[in-house]
Length: 394
Image (tube, rainbow, N blue to C red; front, side):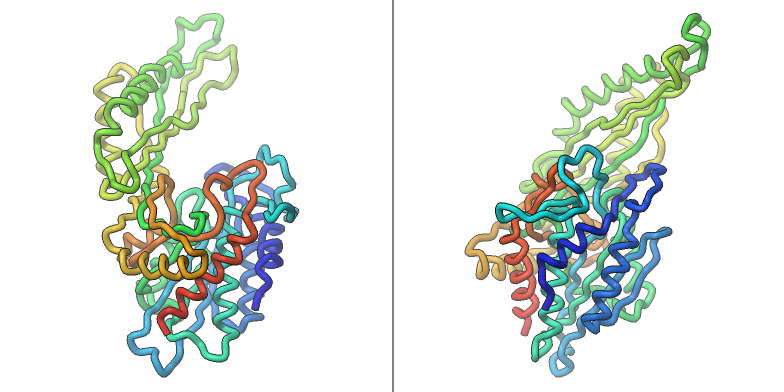
């Protein structure tokens, strides 16, 4: 059986930074080091595995623990899914890839989001593999890429059972997606549409601005329109009992080549969060129509969305959520079913028809932070809960 802390320390020490769509280079970027570590680990555990290329230096890796032959018929196929990538480390106040333990916590980039959850899943599958009697259920562990900027790894994973993968030959009966949930069961969460919006002008020397058209000035009414839209319109478009109402935010703005040049281009990036039931395409076009009406003179141009995902609905995962909640309650004495405002790979799996929930150690409040950490006690509890959940089908 794996040492959970040692495994998590190994994973933290392997940089797997997502460049978040930007042109970065360096040894810390992409997930391939973690993938290679997992490949060697699956070999040691004698678990059949396969790699699924998604992008250069970015492979999903999938391992399987087949259920007992005597109960195979009718026993479920359970999918554990977890992403390999982390957000960048700019501004961190601790050494990001030097795992450190103190005060019941382990520190380092990815400790909370989500290498702690990965370690808990690895611990559970290794323990099940070492048991004298294999579980009735078949367990597939999928470690995917690019969750932090596009969910393309999870989307590619769905193709495994559609295209006849040797390990994931049919659609799973259920999926547990690892994220920091404080050992609660997330049954619903928001989706997202992100896109860029541009205003264009004409460059000129700043000493003669009358001969140019300032693209940044043109963006001003667009920003005012988005501000009005997010305050007066978006919160009233939909609602969900667990996830609340939709939101919109403008997260970045860029424009201009130099202070002495009238800028000919200004770009903003828009983040629109969807509650379950909203459709990404409809949301995007609704926003565009509002800006066209309320910032007509700007001639704003909206690029195609960078990312689109639906929210995770609680309409089809009730039985799975109840069973996982019961396993958690047996271990910790307490577990809630909750909704959250962020998105996860569960959206892609649920959209493919797989009942999905989100679960793992740690709090989203520590994810992406400058001193990211995970409570060690929750790491061990999460792995025990996942183990007990699979065994509950025996």
